[in-house]
Amino acid sequence: MSPPIFASDYVDTYYEIHGNADAYPIILVHPIGGNILIWHHEIKLLLKAGFRVVAYELRGHHRTSMGRTKAYAMRDLVGDLRSLLEHLKIGKCTIVGHSIGGIIASMYAGAYPESVDAIVLINSSPKRFTDRDLEKHFKNREIAIMQGIGPLVEHKLKAPELRDLLSNKKNADFFREVLTKMSVDGFVAATLALYTIPENGVEKLRSSGCSVFAIVGSEDDVFMRLLKETKQEIPNMELRVLQGSDHWVVIEKPVEMYDILMEFLGRIKPKIVKTPP
Amino acid sequence: MSPPIFASDYVDTYYEIHGNADAYPIILVHPIGGNILIWHHEIKLLLKAGFRVVAYELRGHHRTSMGRTKAYAMRDLVGDLRSLLEHLKIGKCTIVGHSIGGIIASMYAGAYPESVDAIVLINSSPKRFTDRDLEKHFKNREIAIMQGIGPLVEHKLKAPELRDLLSNKKNADFFREVLTKMSVDGFVAATLALYTIPENGVEKLRSSGCSVFAIVGSEDDVFMRLLKETKQEIPNMELRVLQGSDHWVVIEKPVEMYDILMEFLGRIKPKIVKTPP
Image (cartoon, rainbow over all chains, first blue to last red; front, side):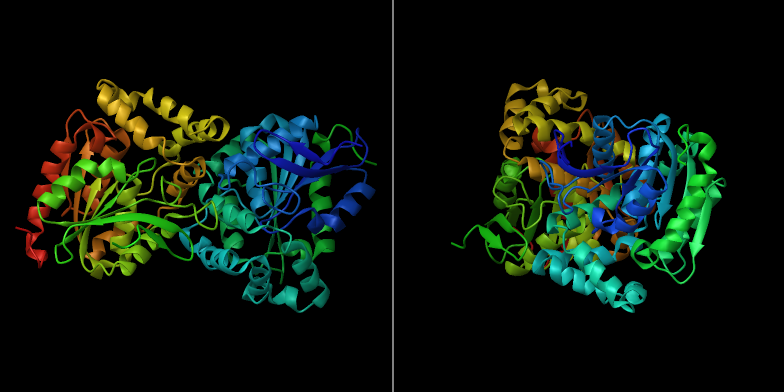
């Protein structure tokens, strides 16, 4: 078995690769605060469906190092994914990204269209945020810097957008278990990297020719707005709204999410050379 | 004499304060890669003219620490200046900022208009950059991260925008002496912070009622463009173009720059209660 750390010039990336080498590869990219644990349900089901699954952790999240410097741009995260997939010799694939993970997927498809069949955006979009969208992170960063990750996670658990999560103790405990594994440096750098989403992201994604699918919780105001705008600019994008769900759909509704994901993957079957059973 | 380090919750800031406590305060904010040394000519002349001068160094530059985290937003730099001026009990003042220093001055005036009479932007503007404006920093960051600050400074000395500097060995040596004192973390974080200039910066500066002055080298394409746009949005802004000069006017033309600065300071005299002799 290959070591689960890929050391590039910049960062030591922890990854997992599951399934047969000749199965079609699905790449999973987690949100800020997440890590591979967040995908445990999807990984199990995607493997059962015959896919190959690559999951990895972003700089400063759980088992991946921060790299040589503690500040980075979105483009650097795209470079990390590129280095990893080249190292793993992954050919054409589909990238599933949640929140910042979907921004990475969008930029990756725009930069390397020949390597990507489709991207699936989960509460994510290729568009820039407004200052207002990113405002809450200033308070969150201050808590992380002054008090640490534990108090930050407790603060997030009190946020209105987590009311659905909180109504289910198992979900809340799982959220806590996953998010407490990020580092302060990782959280601060990732939330600041959100300012560096390229101006021409939608244009590059559209002209990549990759299939674009999106899933969004109806209560996630920011991504509902950004995905509606994206849909106008990329009319071919397929968009599904998960009613009553918010930003953390992967934790809240993993089964419903998986069903939509499989529907999307079925839709790109003609593009997938080695179709899973 | 007070210690020259101000330790806030976030960062240990190195500063210098010169001149009589009852003289009118001028605050100097250096560019990325700079530090207090870059102002040596201006500090001497401003003191002779009877002003009080406060100069300090930004996070990760020369004698100021990076703080608790190695990534930050422009707003954090504005907070650092606010903490320092409160600590020093500086009342109304004029802030002179070069490049990122002028962005800090603009945001500070927008946030605390009651504390600022005027700002002087030197090759700077309150406007957001385009992605294209910031593109060169990706290459510069890579050199800094992979090779270090020395090679980065040599690379910058070969850049077309430094052709005027290079034609004078004394200027080139001084540039080298100043810039090699920044840290890799400081350079990386500061260039990434440029993405976090607020959307409404011009609007907030305009409505602050502070006087706005600007000096720009005619060969500095980016700031010539941004300041022309700023002038349209803030028609009261006084703008002077230094012909044949580029981004590093403080090093290239300290005498000409000082003359314009004094002219500007003369213009705000009615606002200055304790007029220097």
